[in-house]
Length: 315
Image (cartoon, rainbow, N blue to C red; front, side, top):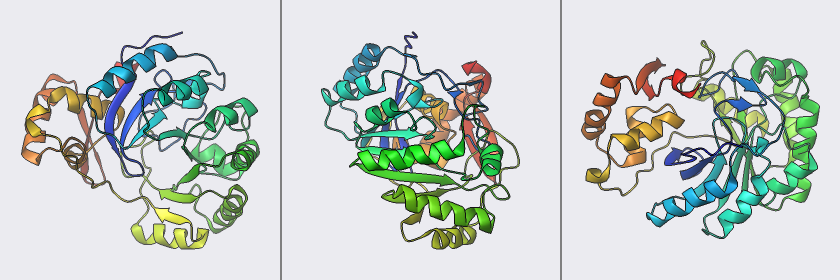
């Protein structure tokens, strides 16, 4: 069992959840999928084995200390540098969080383990489940998500259907659209049928707005996204760019805050400003020494510069 020194991160801006205080539940890039669009990197260890990858007591101690600092967040999100439901202590962690805060708890998952009754029972302790469903045919599943060899898309969909039957909370189903892989008319029609079976509260369409694990993954145009949303039904919404700004005093923010942010999510200058309550000038002043020392690197995506930590530091 690992005892990481830093499992709590954020709050970071989420286009769906507001300001999210995140908890990382698995080692870097331990996942059951290797999605072409991943914002973090290629999966280095593909697994479906559930273990106590981190010490739940350690996480709760860190969370208690973070909350004592007066951190302002809208939600506690259970996520990470891979698939969080791979952590066998998920249910115990949620029970522990309930003793520390009344903030709603969200789980961001790729849905692959929801076919397991124990995983569904543990996830049902949360307030919001944010599962993914990018593909409904084996061909599209292989192209977009590159799953562990034991996984099937049929089991993934059935897991979501079974979870809906036992969960009274909110399900916000995310669909990541990759042109040429899961956007043809036949697949979209099959996707619509799966959505009707799952009956989520919301269907949220996403596309590549940040650098992705594979090169050449282009974002869909707003017009194309809107057309697909209309095709998939009235519950569909296009995830908007994050624009909420916190009320944080600029003088309390340092380079370490930026480093923590971009280590988890590649972020543009506008992302950094929105999350940390900084002016653009202040954000650039703080990030300059980080890029100069090599702690932060930058890359381009559709004409926008995104900052992140070097991938090699996680391996």
